[in-house]
Length: 430
Image 1: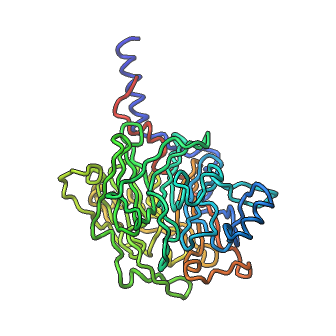
Image 2: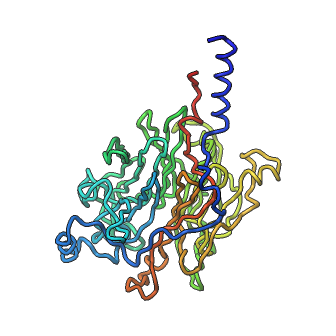
Image 3: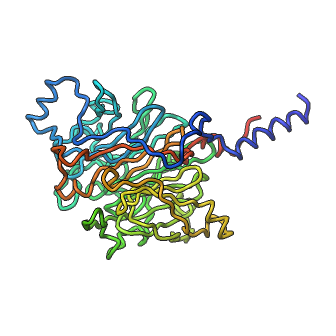
């Protein structure tokens, strides 16, 4: 090959890296931004049991109590929807904690992922309590965070069963491919509440995981290369208190003292964003300040603005930061790029000036929490009336309609991980 042809080939490849390959498929571009669709709904969760006999046995023994099961986390891979069922308010009655949705005779049911054995409470080889997970669309790997504890809701006496861990599954084979147990000096065995997780790509592969801990009000950082972990904490990660702890939903006030909850990472992996559930403030911190346990960088989190409402889940697409607005029964977004252009500042100095409603429904979108993207331009989220569940006032009879719903809304962008294996490469093979 001639020298100038080699140069041209490399130039074209570099240009694709700079642009990124996260392009929504052309056939979905006819959708309208903000168009929402109800995908699944349940009054009470139903599982995909091996047989009716096993279901009835579980009901009689108390290992399955339908009213103790509520969905929380959501992620989407290809055509499959994955959900978590935290063993939060009870120490029994929740037989599975990680599942994928299957249709059985026209009804959505939760099938244990990867299998029933991996859900066994008290077996430390299995999952004990999964609140959130992340799916890497580039590899088909699912990263689940397990507290190792059950019954960790407010005012309860939890069972501290197993060490907290991060478990990685291959969705294509339904096999576990990796796990890491956190040492006690990083994640407490008897006080953690591992809540949310994001992944950080470096040079074409996942290098770090950031995990929020509600109980300890801090972030845990795991390095996949060195197989080591450490913490980062700051007063901004604690519950704000005052009005920030009171969430007003449909005419009623609910008080929550919850520290750092939702976390999101920018698509260039340079900044992590976080917010306590109990509060309105959204913070930003460079990932360079998080990745080394011995770093001397004194960079502190920077408040970028106040959200219109308190949030649980937050998530970055390729352009915007999305968040649930609890007290408004809505999902909003912050157009970071638009504010940067208007303010003529870099990402490190941008303020959250624009907040735009994506979708809202006071009856059917109560407690819009965990968010997820597919590769067709849709943002998925769970609404689960959690404010009613934790106060013991959720109606499981059906007279008040469905309690838990899975929604998707068209936003014409994909998630922060899209094509990160290509975008983050520093070594290019021509």
